Image 1: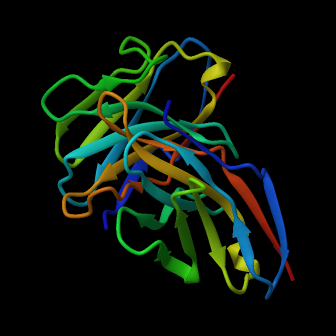
Image 2 (image 1 turned 90 degrees about the vertical axis):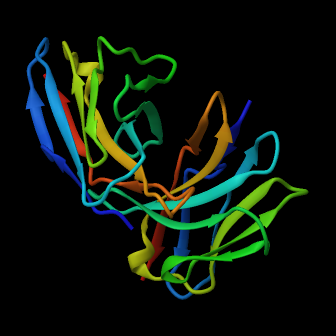
Image 3 (image 1 turned 180 degrees about the horizontal axis):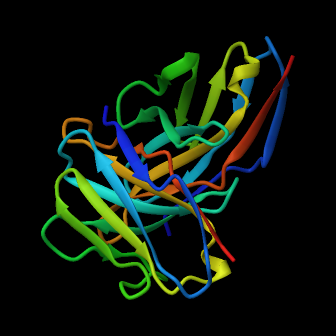
Length: 114
Length: 115
């Protein structure tokens, strides 16, 4: 079955420190992987995607993600966290299940402390 | 990108009534989706809204409960019928614009509370 897992419900990091939000996936075939962010009382915003090519993908707001095929992971990273990065982050995978569908992880809440 | 608006932004409804949520996009899009999200939780795909044909529903969602219209390439509605408190959730419209394959854009959501 196609699935995506975010093992951490919450990540806490101090402002200025690097942050990592973890994601692992399980799909048959080549994965299409995504990160979305949801700020309080707002809709989801697209951050970045991996389709093919370089394993390190750069996205919006200074975020990047690294695709690791052997570990089936797509962790989200940022070298220096900002308080304004505090939000709910969703990893997602595009998979074929009788039609192409986007399957979302459970989400990880990121708290960046000043 | 695509700019998506939803109406209403929120509503409080009585059990047994129905609510229709509108989704308007500022450009023509082929793919349009409806999701449900419990506050602070993940998204669950309800259905894909197909222009000119019946929507494609995911397992656990049926047309009688969640009828969907898609009269053109910029507009869709989702109705939550015969509501119960279990339907309290955030309902999100999403599109995949032509030329931005594999990127989904989301509306601001409709927060529904059923009493």
